[in-house]
Image 1: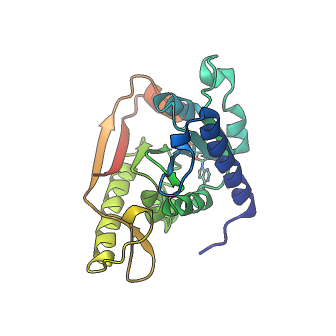
Image 2: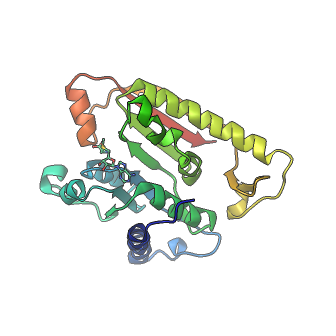
Length: 246
Ligand SMILES: C[S@@+](CC[C@H](N)C(=O)[O-])C[C@H]1O[C@@H](n2cnc3c(N)ncnc32)[C@H](O)[C@@H]1O
């Protein structure tokens, strides 16, 4: 319910402008915005020094990838030769300083209105908030969590803390079950081709068609973020949760 901070509205407007000009530069009329033809956008939330944003941008060269972080100090390093091994930053990469919780709410508005579609959302190594007294700051225990899950077709969380991964996966399951319960018997389909349902309490829940939730440990051959490298070098086991709609 908190009003969205003005600085994040400004930041979001810059990200939108980048997406618009990216597709215009491509000159592909099929990708220009039309009602019912959302533009694909990828988010790298809490991107830190932005290394992962570059890796993701190389993986999806035709889609704008927006790296978001609230730390100006970290973002100032994004795109530096030290981060990119001297290679050029892909043209589909964009970094913006913003508060994630507000940015996600604005992004969900674009998804629900059919302007954006988010095929992949990276949430790599978020702050774990390990103390019991801070637990509600973990994304999956915060009221923002249903918004986070509703944003994208695939959400990938990475963490070095198994408990965080298992909690995130369990919380995702609960959100989908809760959505299914809320929309039960309510055929009032919302916007965006019916992906969102109106629920009894008036909120829009994402359609629940059997999400695929995978929680597993993994060993990256080439680390893609500064934290991933640090943890791997320290011999720590890394975890990921992939939540995808089937
Ligand atoms: C542990 S670091 C991981 C950075 C990067 N993903 C990596 O793996 O190297 C977490 C990052 O999330 C950012 N962050 C945490 N909460 C945030 C929020 N609410 N809005 C924006 N950025 C946030 C922090 O500034 C920090 O850069």
